[in-house]
Length: 488
Image (tube, rainbow, N blue to C red; front, side):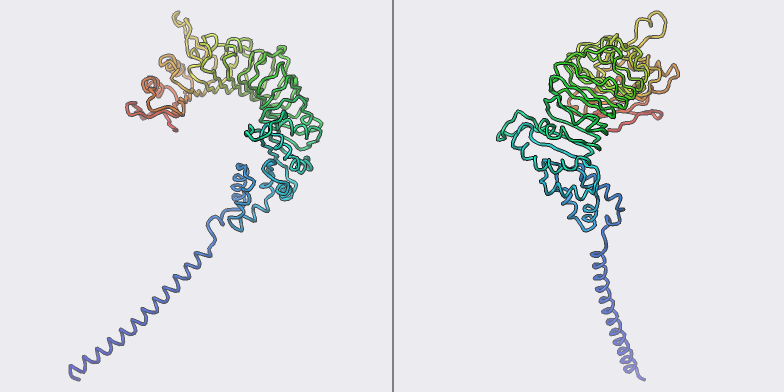
């Protein structure tokens, strides 16, 4: 075979190979198209990642969303996300137990009663405070929820001020509701919160007969001339905020065996109580805020189990030397102490700080504003006689932590000197938290005072800083062995 024939044969073979390769390429491209379509279909039909979320956890998330919203339509919005969410919302009784009476019609309330399947109910009634027409509009809804008072677990009544076009009434929303339910029985009711003005002395529905399971009472609108508290022996948490203040002392129950938390706010008339006449055998938390003649109340109570005490003083209150003067070593079981005085409080002296410390000798944790008790770390003249200085805070021999708000009131010499003395005595390092106001302005000059405190504190305590503006001219160099933390 000559050269021309061989070339033609080779050419024919190459053409055949090219046709085979082209056919194979077209087949691969077709396979790619088919595979791409299959992947797209799988992506479209594959369940979303949240569908792999355990039902129990998803229910917890939905429960949080529902119970933090006051919109009755919240559940419908969640149920419209997908079929799984809809099934969970419709089949979970816990999502239907909170009923906002003023924002729901009778049909919606009946739906809640049905889907909650007998579970305890939380009734919320928030309406304009003085609008009679708005109060009367609640009657049909109140009748529906009133048909199942045996299921009420909690009741919250709140009132807003009326708009100008609302008709005024002498009866507040709280008084209107109380009048309608005062003669009913609530065998399962555990919590009642009346967070609006109320000028009534008849609270029959809170009696032990009508509410035998009541544990939590939050009453922030007391305005009556005299409030008689019925003997509710099951009560554990009692919060009273005297809106305008009764003209005479309330008749506090002299024995509430189960009471663990008590908060009194805004009482502007002196107590007429005998010393050690009120016993709170189980009381663990006590809060007194803007209470006139608070010393008389503290002198009257006996609380051997008290662990936390919060005291907020107003301008008409007595100084600590008077408030706590007759309570020396009386509240030795208190471990957590919070004190605050308003800006117009007269200057407090050494005896004020000492009276406070001696009233609560077992304190381990304290929070206060530095400019309110300037003598807390002030030593007496005994130091000049060659003896150890006597500071009010030295009474607390088991002290562990101190949170100081607005620490610009701390003396740069006295406070660090006390920490140095503690360390020299071999006592545990104190946990100190300096917390500046969260609304510190950029041009506020706290840097000089802060620098004077920061240098000695970082070596003599476990220091924590909160809301400290980090200005470029403040040296925050931290040594290797420092225990400083800066959370914000």
